[in-house]
Length: 333
Image 1: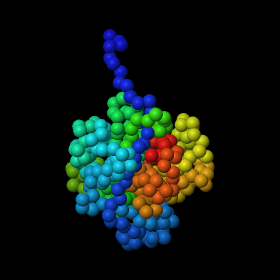
Image 2: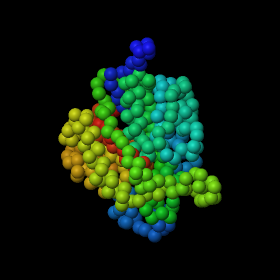
Image 3: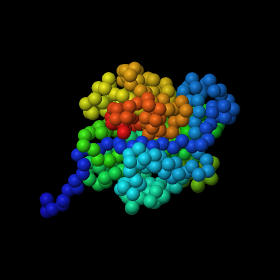
Image 4: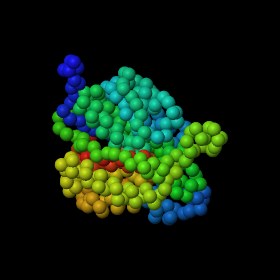
């Protein structure tokens, strides 16, 4: 019988109320990377823009780093952990196939039985999480959502792979998404191209590792294919996110792309026609590619260093393994 189910009712709009970040204690300069890959600091900087990255150590697990990032986001939002009723955690480096990291994080932080789950969308994971949180708050299935992007990519990086050894780093970023009186998160433009799954992928399945007694798997990447895809396919996605949000590029205060490569960022800026007054995130120089943590880490830096205004408009886009992508215009907290 139709009409008997009571629909959920949520907020009219949602916004990001706080941003937090955690960068591991150990800073790793290019000089520690180059010998194993027969390279140089100059070559790495010219190819990627990266000067340093952070590698996590003892006491800096995926859960540890997430907790620190969420605490920072809660502080900015003026909220307590007990007010969070949903956790969406994006990662591809939680060391357990199951359980997910999100319920473990929620328990660690003393949250009261929130819905908690992980998202595996690699470098696009955080932007996926923001889209889900926005829909959850507006749909009535949650009130306050902690969105986390966290990675310990150093655990899955080959130190001798010349194409990836210098690319990846560790860290965590988090956002608190809550109800708003006006639109704070624009429509998300997202999708996937699964026919290109092999462009960025773990080099062996866990079953093959077990049955064939292979070495620990690492993440491989076909650099040139990724570069071309990111430059030529992702700028149109970013443009579409602006269009559906009803925002023009000159109205932006910040552009926060996934921190994959400085040359990719520069090429996207050129294709989008990013004006000089718009702050462009280049956290990759110091933090390298932190996958799901990339966008929130870069956002936190822009705000902390005063490079982007509180309450300003930002276009953010994540893209990577899958191949998956997601972009949206947001109001900065």
